[in-house]
Length: 412
Image: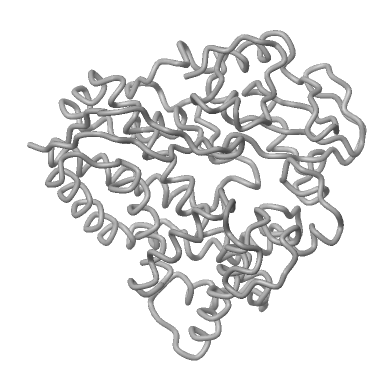
């Protein structure tokens, strides 16, 4: 946890998150300038740091658009936006249509059906980690769990799992990956994350869609292929973008929540003891892990008209960036917010999944289920973690990731 107090800390710079969320910086912003003018690449934006103001933005898509300017912090050209746009970067009616087409894959019944395979994978990973003893928690548990679950329910062959993990990692950090990797000929600026791994995921998803159109199976890809809204199916463009989002969000954000959750238990062993003594706290623990981890640090919106937020005038076209990693630690909503407390009331809810607005994360039920199963299996195996060296964090101002987490894992 950072203790930086400098007022000029650049909250868009990955270096600001090298030691975790810079809580002191955001606390000062919430207190002194909750809607603050900041610069990114020389261009201004409004940083929204308080819980109530973030909720206002997320629940008012007419005023704060996800489509106009999209949800990237950088400003994109019209050509870039056309090439990169996914369900995340749409407003109604397009967003309603895409969400309706995606919902069948994440109904309560569907997610419940994913539980058995999730438990099998989790049990295997925890046992293997305990047998090895000294491991990198990220490589042993956090990374393989969500990606193995998502590729399994998507219907991806097991032998391709490692490749999809690699592509997902290269979305966040494409450094060192040649622009023409995986047969990519698209200019990088037209690809999500400016990564050739996006091209690879698009092509892989496209091939799966074509195959499932003629050979349907009991998997998530088939569910998406067969979904209809007002008689219309997902287009090839919409499907490949949805596939891309599912692989990234279904892997990266849950991995980040798990890594930070285990780190929180390492730092607060009394909370792990409490969980083992009171297993009925699992659901509270899931929400506290997600709040404390704040896997996605921010998202952007763009004002569609002149308005006002927390007394600050916002002009039509202004960039408005909502910081989940600040709102989740707002003292006005969460008493003693830096404390990791699995008895914390789940009301008010954490906002890591976007608050209860139209863009509330479609895969949130899946992420919650995976974390819940992990905790249940930790309880069953009495898993313990002892950090054995310094962790290293993902070089990102978008994802609150942990890249390496050495620890000794025991059970029983």
